[in-house]
Length: 398
Ligand SMILES: Cc1ncc(COP(=O)(O)O)c(C=O)c1O
Image (tube, rainbow, N blue to C red; front, side, top):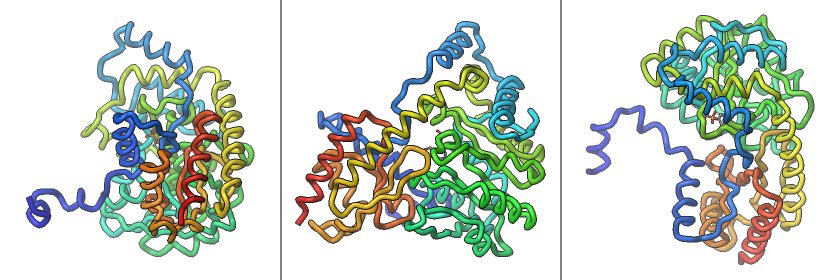
């Protein structure tokens, strides 16, 4: 089938998006691994820890107890209670059960929120570098992404001043992801408050992706959800994936005004319906149980980040901002572009994969042209070996 005939077969909206770059990298790496190639994997965006025992036990007990049927679409009142109570305890928010929706992963909370809020032509402000899916999900809904450049010299920090300049009469929403994937940049508490004011006063929705909110190494985690007076314009997008090492469980949520939450639930009622029943029980154990695992994970991530930065600094010509959160580093590799026939970071990542057997994600996926993303939830030995391979490959480029 030719391209032109396929354009008559498929809906216009599916042509507006691409396969998630990080998933594409994982698929390519899996092929090599299946051929017996020993890879060092800095590609995956997930913790290397196992899901804590008490969370697994709650799911097992739920299955054994036959908690295996449909639940109400936005999740049981118990799981929504656990979500709002955790958020209130940690950030001082005041959401009610009817303002929470439990979803099949944080990505679905984002996808549904965009579908509910964004129409054709609506502008959505998105700071660069951005997590791959934000752009595609907005484009799938027909929205126009307005990219907001940030400065590498300032740690890719998003400021209220920059946001204010990007606002136009067509701005419908602003997406903030702090700490961010891929650069680990954090919006300061002062800037966050000003951005909440800006959004609220101008009738703009602020979508706060808090996937890494507990992995903030710059200070005490903050949430825009704590500005309770602006609730009407705020949607908090949460995920249990990274916080509790639960990426495969698919557990996320949205916190929003009753009106927005009702529409998220309406949309979900026509697609996935409730998220998996026994995952809801596991989520309650995660959110309402001891949070010691969260601080243990956080402490280890800080150590791994520092180890990664030390090793990266040993590669001549590579520079890197110090990530203030999440679990990625985003080094600038421009010193090696134009060498060995490599022009783009996509080519560099591909050569690193096939020749040095190191998995990375090219910066083009996140909207920049001089970086690659390395995910550091691996062992220190893996960091040492992966960066040894990278250094050898790069310094041998003619
Ligand atoms: C910034 C950001 N938001 C949301 C997600 C989605 O997480 P999940 O769907 O596993 O909850 C991810 C996952 O990589 C992410 O990096």
